[in-house]
Length: 420
Image 1 (cartoon, rainbow, N blue to C red):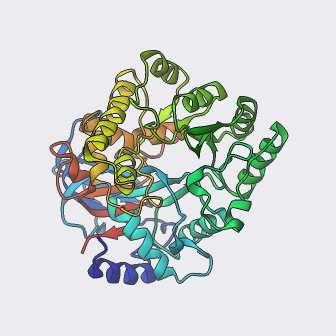
Image 2 (image 1 turned 120 degrees about the vertical axis):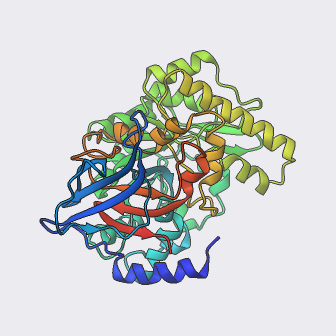
């Protein structure tokens, strides 16, 4: 999965910045030629087209014969392909050892990790749903300073757990790490954790509203504590993401006013969401990150029979299909960083069993822009938008696997990944 060619190239580009030099200079004009542009999930494609970029924003988009490219415009050295708005992965983690002490590690080493995990797959914005904020914020600072080519990082920092409710699958982590994990016992403690987290630079709050404890036992965060954390986060105009585990966890999330579910649920067999539950989720504008690939990944680690894996995957695909059909907002996310398999191709394949290619594109672009109230500046290929773009080798509307076949990734008009 990690070819030596890619690693060497990423090392070189990481050190040199891959053309990523932070804020663009005034009158910096470039142009991308495209075989096809998909301006937005609900817009007609444009064939034999160009995108003109000025000072990090899109200045013009249209058929090549109709767009007058300014003289002196710098051509983006990426073979003509299919251009779309840059992708957002709404569920990642910077928890692998490669991110430890990110403030001190060589820039080239971090650039390799960002390339392998994110930018080679077109991700220009990512939401880290839980990590060590010391490392993640340091990584973000080094990217934003222009030292390292990388995506925009949104982070939830340290998540909140039920009181004395660390999930069983985290208990083998180092004691010093576990000691830092907030497990508020009171409303006041929860509010203070949220405020401290946001003051430190977090962009959202993550709640583990339900945590498996082993032997079939699940511990739930009290609704009072969850609601207090949500209110404290919303007071700062930030979003709250919840790890639901099961249907009761979804109920806690709904009742508490959570904004985004970090997963579908598979802990109950069959894992069915009732029409009423789905309607409640949609009515409360609860967005969903499916993380479909996570379930076969976990099941294979547990050495479950293939028949059981297929049944569970069928249930969560149905959850996504029914939720989207009811008008629910779906956000693309893979739990990469927790999963060591970075390639999102399987996620696209599984999502295609529930959604159309245009709906998948929306989950990557317009839906997260809407959820983060940034539709006026990202999510579409249109004049005035930030030039966060991805160039694919072929059209994903004909085969969703092409979503992962990335030639170039651009952030603010600068190439942060280009395939050898």
